[in-house]
Image (tube, rainbow, N blue to C red; front, side):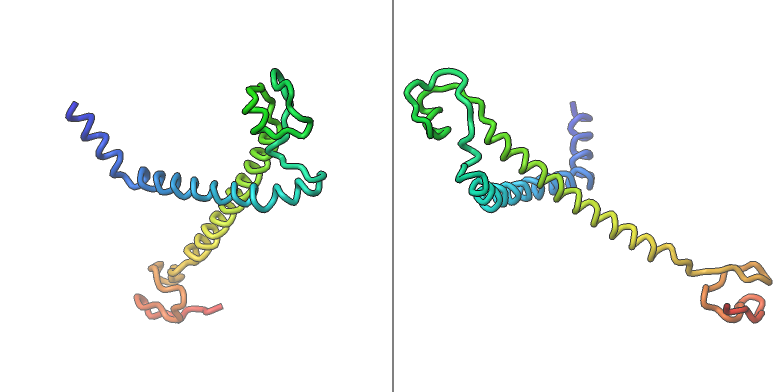
Length: 154
């Protein structure tokens, strides 16, 4: 049992675990921002475009709901005890997922581009081999410090 706690403490103290926790926290905050964009900025104009429709109120009554008016909201149907098929909420969630996936894709693509540029900067050689004595010398050297040979700078 003592070894189990020791292994768990080592696991939690590793950097990967901390990075994962930070990623989850930032991801949930990012998700709430995307959901706010969907619900408050995108869905109202889409609803107007489709004839003053609130997507969250698009549903089909499967059972019950007798006496509900034709323009009943989902809250009214739930209050009446109706079993509903909430396709409007599904549409909202699907749009939210697509936008969230697109945003994550664009972030990952940008990070990969930065890493690639960083790698290109790091890959520039800082040394070259002297053609006369075969020693490593600075890439900008015009004369070898080991054999004192003059080097071509072309």
